[in-house]
Image (cartoon, rainbow, N blue to C red):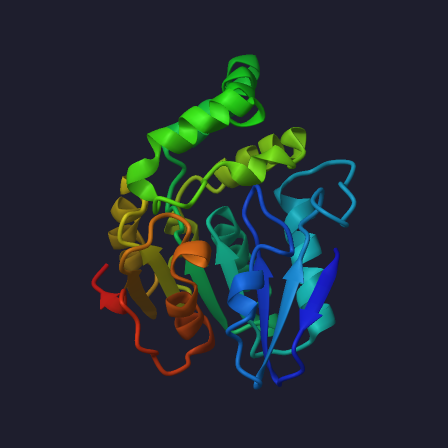
Length: 258
C-alpha cells in the first residue's frame, strides 16, 4: 500500500481516507502538524498508487492497512480515519492492538444508513450510485441537496469526478459489511470522535451508540463545519488530532456530549 510520510517527529499518525479519497485527503491538516509529529498518508487498495487486489473485500483492505502499520512500527501510532475510513481505522486498531494505541474518527457512522445500503442493491444500486456520483448533473444536484450539511463553498461530491467508480462501489459494500458499531464493544483504546455541527443526522444519531460501545471516548463538535471538517474546520480538527493547544478561532471546537 502506498505510504507518503510528512514530517520527522517521533509522534506518528496514519491517515486513512474515505471512499472517494486518497493519500492527499489530509494535506490541509498536515500543514498544521507540529514538529513533534510524523503523518503518513496512504492510498487504500484500488486508489491512487496502490494496486487494486484481485478481490477487493474487507479482509484484503484490512491486511493492507495492518501491513502499513507494521512498516511504521510504532506501538503508539494514532490512526486518523475520515468518514468511511473511520471504520477501517478502528477495525485496524481492534485487529492489531500491538501496532497502534489511539484513533481519531472524523464524522463516523455507527451503522450504514439507508442511503448507503441502497447502493449495494444489485443492478438497481449500481444504477443509483452511477446516477448520483458518476454523472456530472447527479453530482451537482446531490451537492445542492446537501447544502445544509456543508458550508457555502464546499462541494461534497467534487472528489467523485476522478474516482474509479467500480472501486468506490466495492468500498461501499465493504463499509456496509460492518453493519453496526457493536463489533467494537469493549475496546479500551482512547478514541476521539470529531464531527461538524452541521453534519448528517445519521452521524448525530450514531454518537450515543459510539458512547455506549467505546468506554474511553471523547467527542468534539466543530462549530460552523458540516460533513467536511478537513476542509471546513482544518485548524480546529488539527488541534484534536495532534492534541495541541487551541488557537483563537471564530468557530472554536467544543467538547460535546455523545
